[in-house]
Amino acid sequence: MKRSCVRCGRTSSGNNLFCHDVDCPAERSPAILEAGDRVGDLEIVKPITTLRSATVYEALRQEGRVLMKVAHPGANHRDRLVREAWFLRTLRTGKKKDQFPTLPRLLPPYATTTLEQDAYGTTMFGPELLHYYLFDAVEGSQALQDLLRHQPQWWIHHVGWLTIELASTINTLHLKGLYHFGLTPASMLVWFDSKPWVPHIMLVDLGIACDAASVVHHWYPEFANPAYLAPELLAETDDAIRGSVQSDVYGLGLVLYEMLVGRPVFASALATDGQVVEAIRRDQRVPMSRVEDVSPVAELALRAASPRIEERPATAADVVEELTRLFGRIPAKKGSPLPPMNFILVFGGVAIVVAFLVSLAIVMSTQTP
Image (cartoon, rainbow, N blue to C red; front, side, top):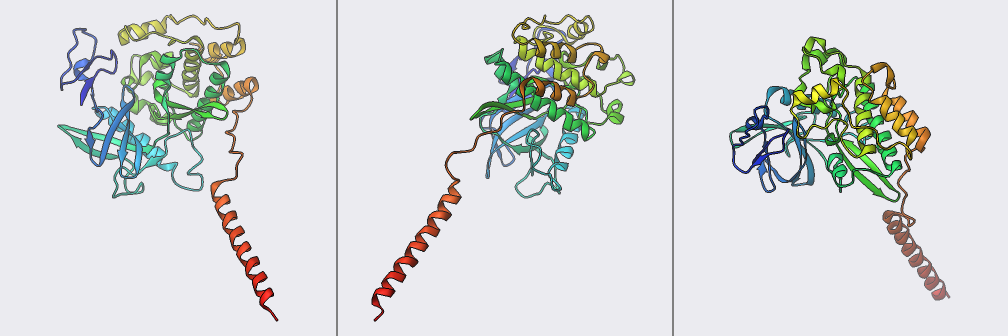
């Protein structure tokens, strides 16, 4: 286990982390599990993505590989993760339980329980009580944040298709009464189909994870990097929080903007949270430097990430519609040109039986006087 600051990135292999910067919360940094650490009946393989409120790990359980999301210390972080788990459990019930491939498919937290009994788990690791939930792993997936570090600017069709899928996911949350309000490239995992080469996402962090009526009760700005919060969410008091569907459209705009220019819209790596908030209020963003080859998409990113709510698209569904007109529907994964293996085995078995019966009939007919 090591300590890792979720803001400045400093780490310590011991159980303490000190930072000389006055504004850095390193001393309150969460414990980040490392490869080989055992948590209950799970063995950690590696951290996948670290957010301000939780870390997602790849882990091993008896059934195989799973993803494990662990809340950072603090009642607000714990309660937010619990709300996520309860919501994800509702997606595993009813007739449409497998209709949400871009959202985590929740698994029982213990080998001896079911989702109906427990949506999330708790366990001790050293002196700390960890709250977590488990969900299906996706082979080859990485955090979008890490992929953008490796390849800052993507082919425009990949940008469009990924944003369509992300906006569709956010629209699904809205239709089910949930707001996100903290969308970042670290909050989603991305992988590519091979035929055709198309990106897909899984949104592994649901942000504030509550409905409009509950935002004022559950809101706490520490759950997300302020560089990705809409200006209307940067109120001085909780009573002034007035987020809306268009606050999540702003988040979509920031992610789209970042994929186009190859850099975060508001730099936060070397700035305090207060400096980031001030930059947002002054609209000191990275200029949109990629326009000539992607003009309609750049224009959409500028509108969606506008500091003025009335200039943004009204809903995430409107973002999907605009991008679909530009890029068409996301190409479906092509099937194998060969028949499925089960079909081959069944057909082969039937052919063998028919050949045996034909041979038997021939033999019987030759022996008949």
